[in-house]
Length: 225
Ligand code: 5RP
Image 1: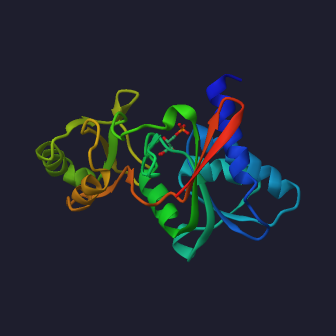
Image 2: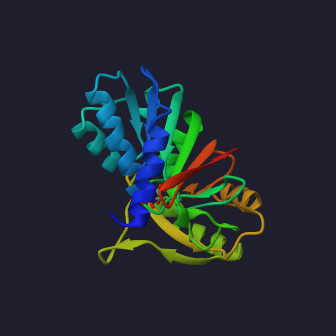
Image 3: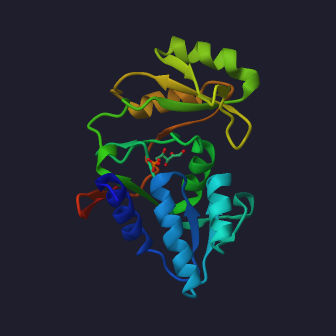
């Protein structure tokens, strides 16, 4: 296993240590969350009674295969603890998420969570957010309007594709990857994006993470919000 994979795994296993019996757990999406989901599967196998809410169809399928009991987010009032990855995080624990396209569900699950733990390898920590383009999930009907508004706000826009086809989220929406350059004020930009009609969700997660556990070499570094 290479270093970045080892860092991902170490951060995931550290986060999973915080899970207690009878909790409702939010399960993230992506290659780092993968290790956490696997470990939650092990906890269930060893007899722990846990229920989970998945942030994507992919995670839902993986959790089901591991025998993790799944709840529908619309039926859950509160999630005890969510473990999810990120594409970038800064020292204020603001994040860019959505590289895997699950940003809308991830944001809902994070917002329902008492504790949102972000797990990451050391490449994800940045001084200023914005090298990673900000994913913006948009209702197809609104694509032209939202693209124009993002351009007006200063972004270079890329409609996300996969295998030469327009990428569709689990909610059957499109994603525009918006390049705003390095951000001076992520919170202000998040507010601006919130105001655009047709935007379902954007990948700026402001004040949603309570803790980041970052793998660094063979150990982990913990940042609390
Ligand atoms: C998916 C996400 C992921 O958490 C993010 O892309 C990080 O993924 P990885 O752990 O594979 O680097 O936001 O929508």
